Length: 390
Image 1: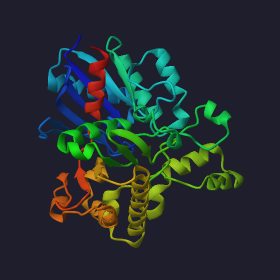
Image 2: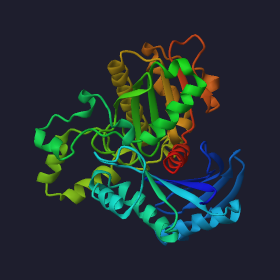
Image 3: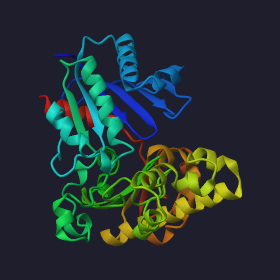
């Protein structure tokens, strides 16, 4: 049995990894990020204290495929950490479907089941599983643990879970699943540490990154979420459209597009990229100061405020709002614009605190607490693997 757990979080635009001591309460030693998977990729790594220890161009590694990327990550981990072996590799998997509602060891049969779910999350599931299989090939004796973004929402209340289609579709697994559950699991635990009273109340978590969603909770239980059957739903995202009248899809098909072409438009050509005509990266748009970029940012905030308001209505109020992930943690302008439009919900922003990009950023007299909490899905992955393999 090895002495460390490697947590691997393969997203739509990044690969995050972290190495933890394999204890009942895993302690992080190092973490890293491989970004810009579409080109110009860099690998940056840090100690647990946040001290940067590596910054390399990994474009050639990424272009060589999943196996090369897996091998490079393992080589880096072995060189830096001097581990005697891995107790497990814990993988984020976007979709667990109806059956996988808790972490499992990823056997060949499990992987086959999960591959059948690729059409439900085509931007994530194939890459999650490709990386899982690459690590399994490099270390067949090391357990590969699959943890599911959808599991957090397994017990959503029926009105939030059910899709209003004939029962035959529900029997085929068509329901609102919700995503980013691993992130929300971590954020809930962290909020309980930072602000126990708020965590027991009515909370909206905003995971705002390249993919973006919201989750509404009451006393720690998820009540509703902005993403539904697929990671396309809800907010405007980097290249994904968010909530869309299904009539638009019918129109596209009648215009002669194939289902694969429609999928490509909705997942890869829409969102901020389509609205701005420049980029799907919020950092680029905020720095551009062009009319098109500003229009994209305006719609992002518009939809974000609308969805937060809808969740507050479902919850019957709002005690806390938590921003997380790349945009949520680092785009103070987006937080400012959002909070200013939510004053009617008791949100009052401390502008100086907002500029610091961390911690509590609401005014002391505001009735709704506003927090920035850094995302750490890798911690959730490591903990799940440790508990599963005890």
